Length: 459
Image (tube, rainbow, N blue to C red; front, side):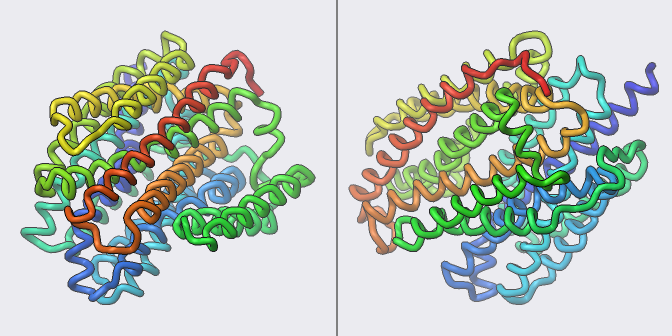
């Protein structure tokens, strides 16, 4: 019994380490972008694609990779994904041009999709059911802690060694994950042995999601609306196509028949759509409106991530004993309350008030994230763990893209194409207020979707 407990603890450590790789490196890379732009002589558009191309490739490959894992084995796909991540991070570190860095980031996204499409499924399949919420809480806390420490690590590495070192540190961590995965992931779960991979469905899905997410990045230009409409139509056609397939890449019947699964995924999508732009807009507010330095702004914004990490640990364990639906709904309600407070942000708002709002948002995020994931994974049978994990990841990335689309639209309408500075503070304040009002309305919808699911239903 003690040996089994030790094995699942070590496995949890390896999966959490893998989960920390991307948020740690992404948040660290944000701080290094000015240096990367200078060294590689990148314009604003190319610089944006360094992050966007990774987001896009991770989103479009998660569900197909989860399906592939069900056929050939989750352990194989997970280790292949970490290995691809390891190789591409090294290549990124040696990049000498913007084009090569963007290509390697795209390939890195595929590796991340293979990891994220299988990691939670592996974790849930290997730990006792009564400890599921606890390990999900730990995993969520690690992600938030990585997001909080990323800027600090990125700043130190960039300043003292150079931006290339961020990729090399990530490659060392991923190498450790590869070794740990070979040792501690014993079972190579295959739920669909002997079945074929749905290539037409995978291509339709990739095309639809790519067009949709790219459309978000083009708002408020008319092309953005055309692309969003086209991507939505392609995904609707994909859903109809998959419904007729005997071996679909995405089991649309599970989504349609399982209300808990469907509403929990919708809640996750709305949560990230309503919240991802918060840090982005607050960063602009603190630096351009209040004229704080990046370091000073970072110390304020880190409050939310630290609170999220601490609360997630407790909320995960609590969701094993209390209703995770109630916890997630309360969490969404607290985020809604915090967003209402941000709607009244002014040029002279007290920093103490802002800190209190960030604490409230951090508690809300912590209460929502791990219990909501617990609900999603508990609402399906073991054979669908990979699909559930990958779909949740896709909802997260799509929501993040939509949230940034809202923010960019507000900036375009209120500020225009001029360079951001304190001189445009009135237009910037208007954009910030529009963004937070839109996010508040979305979050209210999320409170509803989170509260109406029936946790007893299971397929």
